[in-house]
Image: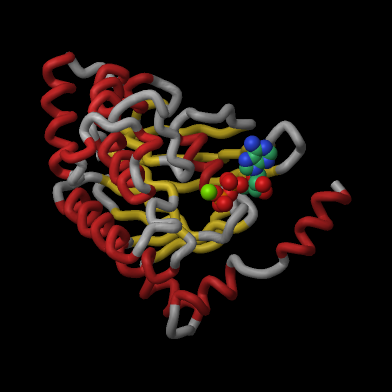
Length: 252
Ligand SMILES: Nc1ncnc2c1ncn2[C@@H]1O[C@H](COP(=O)(O)OP(=O)(O)O)[C@@H](O)[C@H]1O
Ligand SMILES: [Mg+2]
């Protein structure tokens, strides 16, 4: 089986000159629960934007289950919950889900049925006909995930899904994502919470300044760095030097 995601030589330079990704290679096997771990500004969201065709890349190749990343087939196999909740403020919970189904090529009746299913699965029944701005932060997070999963993607990408959510919802989301993974869905999770990556992911890549600097299981990372915690691995590989880098960028 081809890998869920194959990235070769990916680079992204934004219009203002910021080099967010630099010749990055990454392969994620089908069926894995993969964690992309790194500090703010490391390039996680840019990487995801490239994989989901949301940004124009500077260079590199992406394929999704063997299909070219820029094509329709790849797009339909990916479900993404973006870091910034980007819900249409004029749509109700039900409409948000229904239209998403249509956008991904589901027939009307199928999309309607699936929307109702997701509303129940994510405990949004009481808010079915309420517009997104009237939802609480936690409900918005749940809707975002429900929408990402509606078209039954084989690769689910979650960009910091638990940033700023309360402990209860955090555990709820974990439970749900674990269940999805057990059913065979490939998960790519970005986070800067070390304990989250360690608890959930069977493999972790550490990203720093647009490059993958380490990749292994949590145990393997600790072993190869001769330390007892993932935090120590993190501090040794990706943390620090941020100020120096900023100066460097100015010089360039
Ligand atoms: N639209 C943009 N224009 C210019 N620079 C950007 C833009 N988006 C992100 N960046 C920069 O790219 C780098 C990586 O950002 P990002 O991918 O958001 O990192 P992360 O998600 O790991 O926090 C940062 O230096 C950030 O400031
Ligand atoms: Mg981000």
